[in-house]
Image (tube, rainbow over all chains, first blue to last red; front, side, top):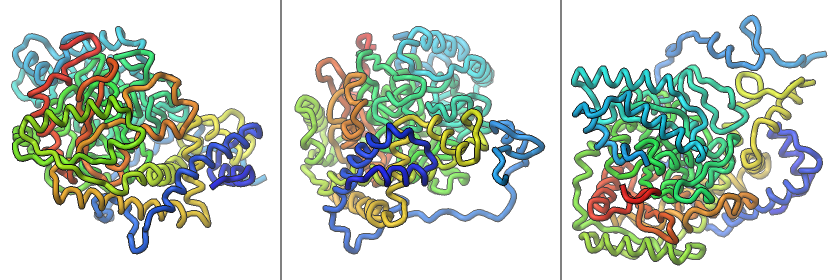
Length: 95
Length: 485
């Protein structure tokens, strides 16, 4: 399946990845080649085949609804590029 | 070669006999790491941590309580979170990330008193088959420094092959332990999905990611698997099931073992010399008492297409967390929140990671989910069913781990699809969640060739036994870049 530059820009927007104008066309070609590979799946007869997510067929486990982590807010905030007063800082969203 | 690290058992024996201390062993490994710095196999060296861990091991050895890994130096793939030690996943995104906690595998090896000397280089976010996709530069193959060590656990493989450490941890999402093990003449074990905790192992494709080990021999892999296998309630996909006694399992003889030789694994794209080398190794298995059975895995050709939908789709979801807000790289002077996200991610991720995120985003986007992701998951069941059928008639399945020996640096880096083809014989195992091992089986033009053995779920013991019995009768696994050890 070949995808055009409009689609590339759309996917990039969904993925929140900035792409230089010069890179859009080559990227459309590269992604098209990967999707051509994916299109080989079309040859498979998958009627009545259930999708497989966990190879061992296990369901996700449940645990008691109890606090298991200590409050380590300071340790995690210390990793942030910008934080103050217990908050993550980002550029102003509302003008 | 330092000559010190031919096997875990040999190191352990020297430690117990007090011929050497854990601190001396650690210093030796750190020195060897420096000697082999040209391989670029380590992203971070943790000398302080290593010496502290070695002192702890020495104290315990003196008190007479130890495990088979106490005082043994090793390296963690830089995908495992290590508390207080930088964990980069070979990405600019995490170039300065110092985790506030240890991964489950890290805890286990810490508790076993193994001594980590640092963090091994890898393909960024484990996406790659050559270790050329690292923000910290490519790793070189110790057998021929013009060649790649394989990937994504390329740094781990190079360190063990060069004799810097006797083992290293790795992860395998589509072949990332087995392929570098094959390229570097090592034994590499990918356990059953769910057997080893993924807690603290930075996620790439969560339904495929699997922690494991690279070492010289199956016996060494056995020691490490025994330490890292087991249930971890913090990983919801970890399987609550008892761990076998792998040391006992190692003794199972080859007599009566039925090895299925999968036709498709010797198909188009497999180098004739590699195929012949693996066939010769299988002949040897036959001479040692195993029975070879011709089998077919009819959906094998669908594994690469299914993998390159499922893995990118899961990656696009997993890597959405890198937004420049909570941790990791942030672009300079963001003008808006949108600008912060998009430039941070464009700068923080390398080309292959961006490519996979975009492919995955497309496969999951409105209108395409059924055609790509859901279809791939159905094909995934077909591939898993092939194995279920095959294991009705055989105990293990064999074939070449890789289509060729290690290729040249730069040879495939410009063509993503050529690189993807390097995983043709390994990805199906991840899709089916099975355990598999690559063992040294001979040489092709001076470069190591790997034989892959695949077992039913949780039959790691059978894999290790079949590999160990072969290694008792052969010496391929003892060959090193500097001559036989």
